[in-house]
View 1 (cartoon, rainbow, N blue to C red):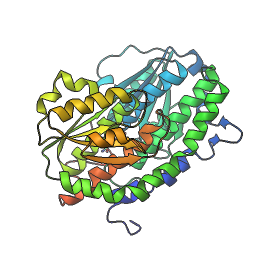
View 2 (view 1 turned 90 degrees about the vertical axis):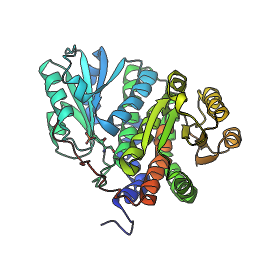
View 3 (view 1 turned 120 degrees about the vertical axis):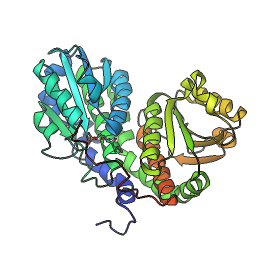
View 4 (view 1 turned 60 degrees about the vertical axis):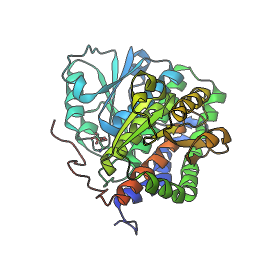
Length: 367
Ligand code: M6R
């Protein structure tokens, strides 16, 4: 069932043009300029009255929550908080009926997320589940929700479920923005077109970047530590890239907001440290270019994810992975792909079992 791929992880990475399409299909009409999400309609009054949205998740799903925080606050002007389910459930959080909780989970069975939701529901909050596995416990406990439609994910490391979460979270943000009137029609149309183009842009990465990423993977497969840096919408991309590498290659990796490096991690930088910058063209670009220069001055090895045609970063970097241009809000959907491939090929290079990394289970049903 691996369809000729060596591993499920690789198959699932390559499925993403289709899975992202599937998670958007039937929900987004680029011609009629509308988004249909019955789950949002079902709790529209609660969302309109919400004091804030709290997103609860673990692991990779927590990273998609962080992206959603940036996007929802920008487009909908609602306060969003992102919580690790394991912390949220134990720290006696202040919750009321004016809170909408979005739970994100591939499996829908993660114990910490499930119990966090049970607690929040008891205190009167409205629960919206964004879940991949149909009929799972989190789907059942939710007041409303959407499925991600990524299909079964077998590899322990989440790949296609993550990008499907990002795609649906974008739709949720746009839909709420439209309900609240915080986005004008022109911008709404523009974002729909941007989302519509994502599957083909992901396909472009898979068609054009794999060989280069394999070469980069070979070059750095002996690293002991890798630092991942990003800003803004792509700060969570850095966290997710680092988690993928840890899980699949057992190389110690850390993700940071690029500007935080001065507050500690920069002490690690020497000529042996690969530093991966998520440096796509966005409103933070000048800032991240300065961060790249700071690492270069300390002889760190720079690997950058860049937007097509960005010669400036190309000149500074030792190695680059290219993604097509897009709006900055959409960029995490594209930038995730090279980082998944990099982790995969480094794991393979190191001879590891990438589908079943040691010590990990696909779904964490115990706390
Ligand atoms: O099924 P869930 O999305 O609730 O799972 C959450 C995490 O356990 C999961 O994302 C984990 O971090 C993956 N191994 C990441 O690749």
